[in-house]
Every structure is written in C-alpha cells, then in structure tokens.
Image (cartoon, rainbow, N blue to C red; front, side, top):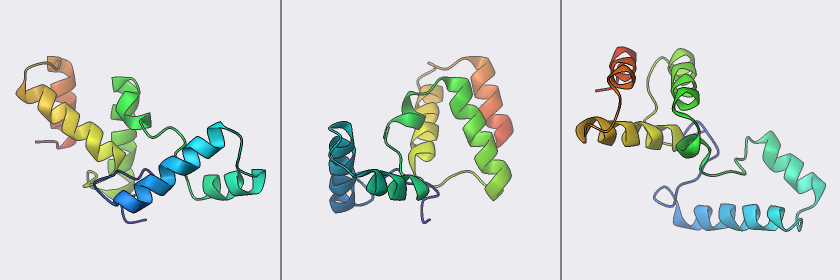
Length: 110
C-alpha cells in the first residue's frame, strides 16, 4: 500500500526484496503451492519485477497516465517511479524523442 504496488526494490527494503526474490525463484521452479501463489496474486504480487522497466514506452506511459488519473499525482516511489526516473535521465541525455518528452511534460513531469 505504501508504494502503490507490490514491486519491492532493494533500496526500499533489502530483507523484503530478498524474500520476494526467493518467492519468484520458487514459483519458477514450481515449488510454491497453488494456494500460496493465489494469495500472493490477490495482493498484486509482481512475478516479473522488471515489468514497468522493460515494457514498451507507450505501455509504460499509459500506466503512468492511469496512475495520475487514479491518485491525482505522479508516483513518488515504486516501479513506475523508477521508469519515470529513467525518462528524466533520457531527457537530460537527449536520448528521448521530442514527442515522448512533450508527453511527459504535458503530464506534469519536470
């Protein structure tokens, strides 16, 4: 609830991030019970920890728009925030398209 998603970054909580990583590995190896998997999924557990960081730009941007519509602000932490930080860096480095930069500015990113 604190970060708006179930993506746990090492910088947020090293111990929890380790536990989450262990759950992902156990699920890949089919070591978790169906009940355990279902409980985690009901909480919004992210099996693919790089989801927002690796998705297509437009998909990530749409997720950001949905977040802002829902919470009336941009994220201040979490995986979507990490994606925003990557975009800020791309703007600074001039490695983002003008169209993408304009969309981000229009949304309120500085």
